[in-house]
Length: 340
Image 1 (spheres, rainbow, N blue to C red):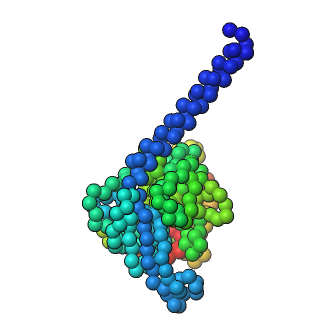
Image 2 (image 1 turned 90 degrees about the vertical axis):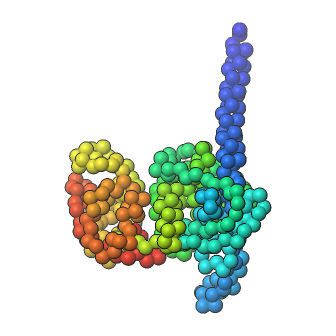
Image 3 (image 1 turned 45 degrees about the horizontal axis):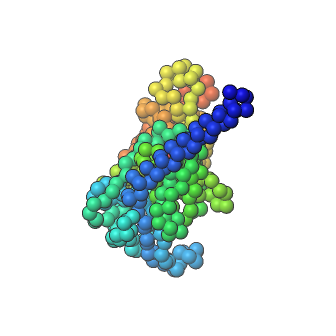
């Protein structure tokens, strides 16, 4: 075989390999959509006007829409708080066109999550995945109803983890997933799923006019909040007044201080006058334990700061440069727009 023929053969093999990869990717996305699509809900809401609200749109009230997904056979649906907050009337339309009235079970503006419920037979449900196992670069598929276009599918990758951002209302949301799977108004509340069709996040926001910078609330946070909303209808939290992000800990730090986890929370902001500020916690501290329990990430810290902690002196353990330091801190009740 001459050189030109050999080169042509290698190019043909390479093209076939690339085609196989693209076919596998397409098949993976198609399989996920077929599995998950029937559980995605189109939500329509009617809101009452508030004549005293400074925003003219809020004074008028009106109709809105968003997405959600069924996660239990008896009709519990997870969506965003901002989709259903203050709604007078909620309707949920299934992928097969059936429409049912929905009632609000619980609402948590601090995580932008809410639970609604419908009474309907033969519901398809979605399983939750473990968001702590997400890796940057893995496939992320979003399904929702942007601008009323039902069951729209976009695909991309997980761009980053453990982001924090403030919404347009000033609410701070920690530990969110960043993805480039395109989101638009109406996608809010829909699922972000992995290549196995399991929910890894709840789509919540997009930064405009930027393209490809979208955010989702991790599934582990969503499950924790959902359980409390279903059982109690609301979430009472305590706070110490820090904002932070998940970070890996250097192996030498883990070994030297005999830490049980290889990750912690980097304190990026300490609110002035907060319990943490009064205790002496500083920006840049690595928070590794709360009352003796390991803190491997923001999720652990949020789970530790329950309503029962309000007014109870606790111990926050941080690594500061070459020292491990304990601070006595007394959590206070969390208010909307608070940091942790």
